[in-house]
Length: 563
Image (cartoon, rainbow, N blue to C red; front, side):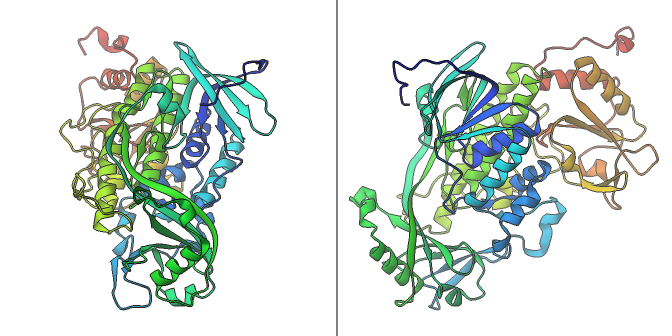
C-alpha cells in the first residue's frame, strides 16, 4: 500500500460501522446488502467509477434469488434485456464452417428450474450491473467514494483505523470503523498486509479481452443466440461473446506471457486478423475498441480474514471463468457476511458468529474453484492446456454447484458433517446447512415465494395452531432476537397459505408438528422434524447456539417442571 506523506496532518476522522475497500461487483454487492440491513458504511474505490469493460456477466440463479430479495432483480434484468434470448454455449472450428457443436443449447431445458426457484439465470455484464447496485445502495443511504484509495489500515480490539486518499483533491481522511471488508481484487493489498497465504493450482492461463465492433458479424452469427462461442481454429482460437447481438462484441484471445509474449504484441492489426481467422471470414469488418488483459487462476485464501478484517470476492478466491462461478461465489460471500455483520452490530449475535464466515465460505470456494477448472477442461477453453486434469472432477452440473452447496459446519445446527460441500446431485429438502426450499404461498392476497421471507431477520416456519407459534415468539423475546414466525396452512389462523399441491411440511423435511428455522440468507439453520416436549426452550437453545449468545436460561414457565 502507498504510504501517506509524512507531513500530512490528519484533521478529519470519519466514523462508520463498516469500511468496504473495493467498488467492483462484490464490493458494491456488499454495500447493497449492508444497506438493506440498515448498516452504515463507507465504500472506497480507487478507480473513478464503475466498470467500463463488458466482463463477468453470468449471474447464476442463486445470486439472482439474493438480488430478488434485495429488490433489485427487475432493474438488473432491464439492464440485461439485450441478451435475454442468449442461452447456449457453442463450440466451433469457425462460424462459417461445418464443424460446430452445441455444448448445451438451453440453460434451462424443459423449464424445470421454475419448480425449485422463483428466479432464473441472467446475462448482465459488470459494466451494466454495477451502476444498478451503486444506485440502489445510494438510495438506502450508502456512502460510495470513487477515486479514493486505501493507503493504510491498522486494527485493535475495538476497531479498524484506516487512511484513505481522494485522488481528485489529494485530501487524506482517517476512517475509524468497527469492521473492514476487503473486496479489493485478486492482488489484494489488504490480504497481503495480513500475510494470508493461498492454496490451489495457481495460474491457469492468460487472455486478452478485445472489445470490437463489426456490422457484418451479426449476419454470420445468424440465429445462433449463444452466450459464448469457443472458436477452435488452431492458429486463431478464442472465445466470442455478443454484447448487443448486433455490432458490439468481445473476443478473448489467448495470451502466453510464459513464452515471452507481451501486451504490446497485441497490435490492432494482429487482433483484427486473429478475429477474422477465428470467425472464418477474411473480409470481416473489425474495429478494435479496447483491450484488457486478464488472468485465470485457481487460488483460495487460507483464511477469510483476521480479527476485524474480512476478505470477499477475488481477494478471497480466484477461479477459472468457465461457468461464471467466481463472481457469483463473491456475491454470495457478500450476502453471507452482510447479515452476520448486521447481527453483531445490531447486538443480537455474539462476535463469534463472524468466525463462521470463513468456516462456511472457504470450503465452498475450494470446491467451486476445482469445478470451474474442470469445466474449463471440458469446454477446451482457449489458452488452457493443463498438464494434468484438475482435481475435483465433474461434481454434478452447474446448477448443483450454483445452488446445491451446503455448510456442514458453521452457523448451523444438525448439519451432516460428512455431507460434501458440493454434492453430486441437487437436493434442496430442508436439510440444515442448505438453501431452504422454494414454495409459492399466499400472504393476505399476495403471491410470493418462501424465499422472499428471508433477508433481515431469522424466520420460523411451523403449522398453524402448533405450539411452535407462541414458543417462537417467546424464545425470540427472551433473547432479544429478531424472529418472524409464520404459521403455515389452509385455515383461518395461517399467515401463509401454500398453493394447491404445495405440501409445505413434506417439502421441508418435516411432519406437520415440526418446525424449521431459517437464517436471513435463506440457509436452514436448524430443524425439528417433529414436536418436542418444550418447544420454547428447544428453540431458545438453538438460537443461542446459532448466534453465539451463550447458554440461555430456561423460561420460568418450564423451569419448575423439568421441561
